[in-house]
Figure 1 (cartoon, one colour):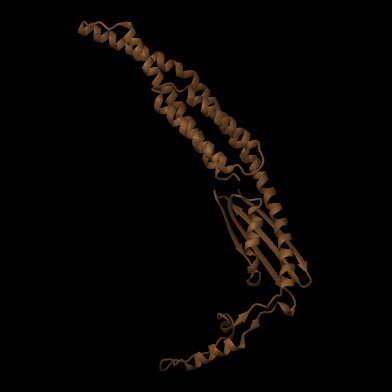
Figure 2 (spheres, rainbow, N blue to C red):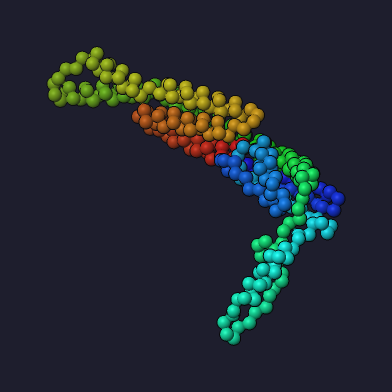
Length: 290
């Protein structure tokens, strides 16, 4: 689910701001962007994110702005001198000349180093970032909760649609056997009148019984109804249920496909198409569920 959270504070002469964004993703994927001297806390930040979040593409950005001289990067003069020496040793083609851009030189690898921070400063910095991350996460989770309530209502509406269609299929199921019995009897009667043969009633009934057993969908409709009940219960429960809902939707689709393959009836076939459409809508929406 989508969401956004932000938290900031000022500590002495340094301002800190944490922004967290999440987008839909069936898996958890974190992108953590920290300043160089805060890279050591990346694993701890991801652990914080994984606490309340189990799905989604989550991006966290930490911005730190220092207003004191201590925030300045240190220039590695030895590295800068070495770059300059190499440039002087490089011969340009005849007729060409060049100038040295100091601002560009400062961007070369190893020229500017972030200020060193000792263990106490690391602990202090982590305490600030941890607090801000938790505050921003709280906002993000709250926003996702609002979206989740709307999503739950839509999922439950689709469940009711599937349940109504399943009940209709269950009502139509007995007519499949009756229709087959009638068609078979008419076909046999026609053949008997043409070929002047005799088929006993017991053989006819045995054939109908075999067909009835082969196309019986009572178990499938019962399991489908059970899956719907479990699905509705999970939608009302707390915690991460997205993967469980995804599994139930897959099972519902499997039962529906079996019903469609067993039932030789136009009305049931139409309802099966409608059920599969509703399940597809469920599966699409479930990808956004935590």
